[in-house]
Length: 288
Image 1 (tube, rainbow, N blue to C red):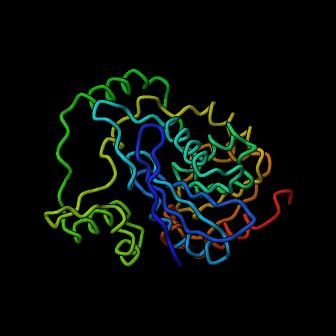
Image 2: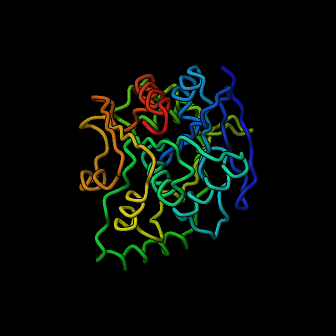
């Protein structure tokens, strides 16, 4: 199956976009990755969807994958991910899409689908219901931590061997089989002229966010979604926010599916099952 890498210049940055082309009358399926991930790690899901005759797009969010990092003195704001997605789709010229978001990418997908409901034909949230709501009393401390981190001198990106890249990912994802980690690892680091690898993702994504998660606003976006929505979870080992039931209840047209024991990174561990769920759900007529 052929795969195309594009670079789109929108919102002042060069954005990496992977495309798996196919001839279909249905809108493209757009895959939005999660925190410290990239569009490339959807490859096994995307190729299976392409094999079903669907065109698939997987952008790298700003500061991830092959998309540029923001200016050294700038800040990553969640809302910018949503605007980036809008502008990428405007360049690609799509009136409607089937939208899939994993983890943080699910939060991007929810916000986009709630703000622009007519643009989303079908929505799939892969454990993408947002983080736990922070305690409002912690806001002053969060602000101090954000500014302190922003003013700190940043270290040069760590240089690693390929084996060290794999070992680091394995430590961060202890429940993911070693064979899967070895398979996805090359997409997370860039090979330098010195023969060593450095993470593609901007390390500043690990710093405190300037604007914390707003639960009330997120619920409002969930309630504004008009598209039929599928929520997929990876069983008890997956990510489940404390008020998951209330968030799901806010969605008007909801279906649920579970991939038992898949865990949170199910696009790595159970790509075939996830692709089948997405393909079946997004293959239906929008009215069904």
